[in-house]
Every structure is written in structure tokens, then in C-alpha cells.
Image (cartoon, rainbow, N blue to C red; front, side, top):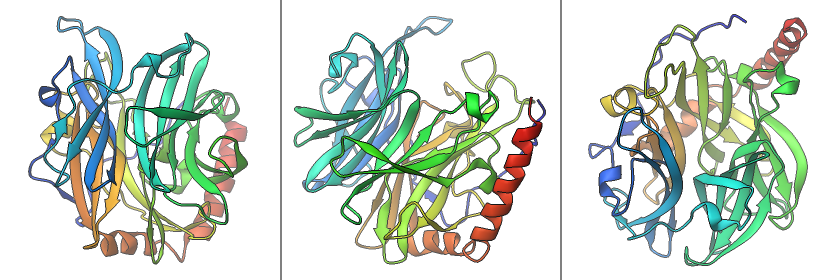
Length: 357
């Protein structure tokens, strides 16, 4: 099936990559490590805390995957990190032989405790998990979804007496047998049982995505609404190798969205241009999958600075910064047309679905 390609994109001028990038690599890890990326980052008990994905491969060629674990790092400034001497989570975390690997953590401080969302590969599908901790040593597993769901993030506070999360299900069968994954919202009264789900945004709402969109980092509260960084994906079949795999045809960018404070599944506005696009050497060269930016942590400082932590090329962890007012303004540019464009986009998608084989 032919798809309409996106073409070249550029990062927004409001975003600034930190000059110390990458801020965490495999060389910083005191145990076996090949790739360090897609970390969850938050502020907890007076310091920055990062839980990162640590992939281990054989050193020889062709590169052969061995295992994944999750590591812990802390920082006083959010830039320079000290990695704990051993991993904190591996495939035995859940205690189920079905589990093959656990990865892609997202951290939220909720009621003074850390809530972590994560992805779980099992023998019978990909599940999303939620766990809670006070010390990163003792965990309470709260929820495991049915397949297939992932990229879940939990909001940092209750809204309307409920907990809220964003997620990206994988409805391949009902979406024409191909990638066409959108961002959804569910709520809960106890962090364990989730429902009342809403579609938040669809791929067709974004002029810089043609494959999938989904949550990035947990949202942050601002006076104008919930500010959320998301991931967007465009597919171009003309792309070549672009990494370790025989071909890698996708490019991942970061976008920015503003949502209603009382009804967080309702979009107030969003940027029609990407926030962060793969452009630098550590984003487009020498990685496992080049041309990938995946945001996993967002911290709003008292100064109004927003720190956005992201995995680059599925290989290293990086940091970008922006002013919260600039990010909100990017979303507000799209506020007037938001409903009209969403409705027309959904109608176009329905027509496309009918014509797809």
C-alpha cells in the first residue's frame, strides 16, 4: 500500500539541545551495557532520578541481542548523572515465566511516591505495566494490561477524583492490518483497574506523522492546561539501512500538546510543527536505529524552564530545554482550528479505512 511521505522536517527554534549531550551512554554504566535510552526521569526527594533502559548485545557481528534490564541514576543538576552499581529491574521483576523482557520506563511522582509505567514483552503479547515504590528497591505491581498496549504514562495528580493515564494500544486488525496507532486516555479510581477510555488524538491530526503517535513523558500541569510531549512517527519506504537492522524506514519526532485541566482527554491545542526532530550526529548516525527521538521525561522547573529527556537513535539518553511559555504558545497557535481539523481528519481517515484492502 502506498503512503504519503512526510518529507524533510526541522526542530522548533524554541527547543535547545543541551551542550553536554548525550548525557548518559553505555560507557557511564558500571555493568554490562550496550545501549542506554528511553529513560523515565522525575524529581524525587530533592534530586533528579532516572530509570533507564539498558540493552545488552554481543560485541561481535552480526550484533546479537542478549537481554534488557533497567538501571537507576541520580543527579543534583539533571545533567550529570551517577549510575547505581547494579540494575534495579530485570525480567524476573513480575515473577512470571511468560515475561521475556521489561523496558521503556516512565516515572511520575504521585502522592509522594514514584509510580512507574513500563512495557512488558510476554509469550502471548505486549503488555503495559504500572508499579509503585518509595525507594526503587521495593515495588508494588499495581496493573498489567491485556495485549497489546504500551507507552503508558500516569498523570502526577488526580483529576475529578480519578487517576488518569495516556496510552498507545496496538489495534492492528481493526486498523487495516498495518501500523496506525493513536493516543488514548483511560482513568481509574485505584491505579489498578482502568476504563472509561477516550481517543485523545489520531495520526491524521498531525501533518508530520503518517504511521503512529503516542504518549512520551507524563504531562505537567500549567495554568493553561496539561502540557504533554508526545512521540510521532513517519514512515518512508524509500529510506535505507539507517542502523543495525537491514532496513529502518521510520523516523521518530517529538511533538507538544495542551489538554484541558479538568477533562485531560480533551485537546485544547497542539503544534502543527514538530518540537524536536532527529538532526544531530547522535540522533542520525551510528545508532541501533537512526533518526529516532523518543521523549520519556519532562520536568517543569520553578524558573519556567522545561527539561525534556529523550532517547536518541535507540542508543543514548539526551536532554533538551525550552521555556514553558514558548511550548504553550506553540500549542495555542492551533487552538482555533483544533476541533474543525480533528473532525475533518477523522472523516478522511474513515474514508481511507473503507478503501484499504
